[in-house]
Image 1 (spheres, one colour):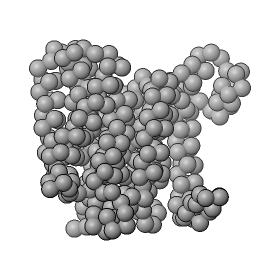
Image 2: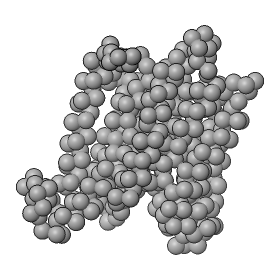
Image 3: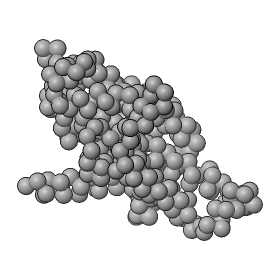
Image 4: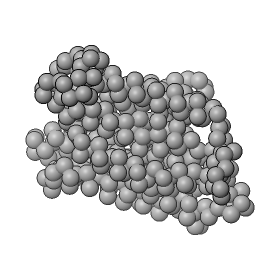
Length: 335
């Protein structure tokens, strides 16, 4: 326990060690993303870019395309990782991640509506995705609420049902759209980091700076809620208020990530579970989940750029395949 005046912080050596290793892994992935591309670079080329001695085309490639794409992947992964860990804690269920219980689907459907019906641009689509995710969360929260309590399993089941409905609406909108809008909506719905630049970096960084501290502040109460509502009430936690605030903030994190890249599957689902396996300590490991989410998505994007099959493979498809395999592995271990 570290104490500085009236402030105190519990330090867990295992968490610090895992966090440091994850930072190194993330740094290695980002560095590899800068080196690997249509034109392979060396460390001398990166050094030339940093010192300003590189040719303009190389500087534009590294600082204008590769670096913002890698940073966007890391920041979006961090948002999804924290959101997934918070939802799994709230629902006390490993399936309680925003992409499985419908919140990401709500954000994606609102964005598809904006693209197909209102012909909105990038900013309008991003705003629609955030609002769609929050509205979907409110609907799920209200439908799952019974006798003033929002149960964990009920939240998951209602979220899955609402997610199925909004996904069907999204598919219907795409099917009835003209060919150009349908192609654009379908590409966006696949989840992609292609063309992401510095505006996406600043937007996702701002989102993380807003929702990250709030979720970290709620981490202790979320850990107590995991023990059960009655136990949390007994130690002074206002369970329903904490749950409502956590749902809204976690959905805002997932919706901001979806607004930047489109729906990215399984990062939120896997990050929290991997964090608990790497550092099996009590509590909600929001920080580690953010680092794991960042490393997973940055690594998946690096893989997607090297799975060229005539078109750049959307990173959302890569995470769907990897996440599906991870889910099958988990099920096989428990059967």
